[in-house]
Image (tube, rainbow, N blue to C red; front, side, top):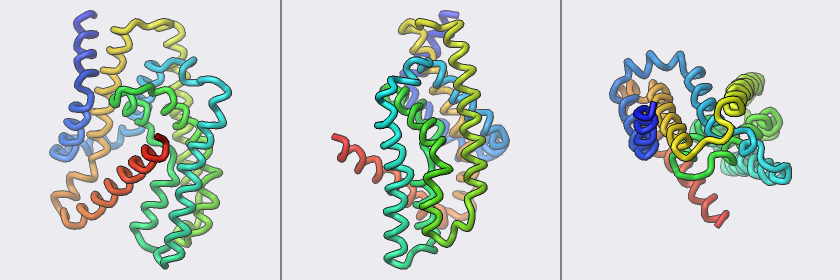
Length: 250
């Protein structure tokens, strides 16, 4: 058992390299990535379970006084920013552009389900990321309506509501199971146990990204020139937003 704990601790220390290895494997081995794709929902549930087990119920829930600030963050990302982008697209006549629609969709979405695990890999407290994920997912049915009403490409939001509902259910079940296990088995984990859970989270994240790359590898081989502009736009939009948020919050 101690040997396994040590191996998981090593995985935790090299979590970022494992994530990169997962990305490369998903692109280089499209057959494996495609085979894993049907299990993506279960893999995400496992990832959330491990993250919630590491965080624990008390840290995950936080103080009641933190709820308004977290809600404000979620509303800023999921409502204010996509509304500003949608209005800008309309003003310049780009409301029907594929890139503009993709950007609005990206901004309107809740935090990704792997956010707590990515926060662990970055060496920070994952509890706020889990809170934003839960609150943001719960707010999706409300925040998408004004955004989608502005753009003609979004005729209805029923599929968005259904997807948000399924994700919220997965989060609730995975978190409840993890918190129950934490209360029964890991009431006060020591540093080695936390490191082992971080390693398990890193492994789970590396496995999930293999499945997430199932469409990238074949497209890169078949039509790289079509994929590269979208990759550049995705990197620019995501990293650009993160950089701006970092500058504003400092």
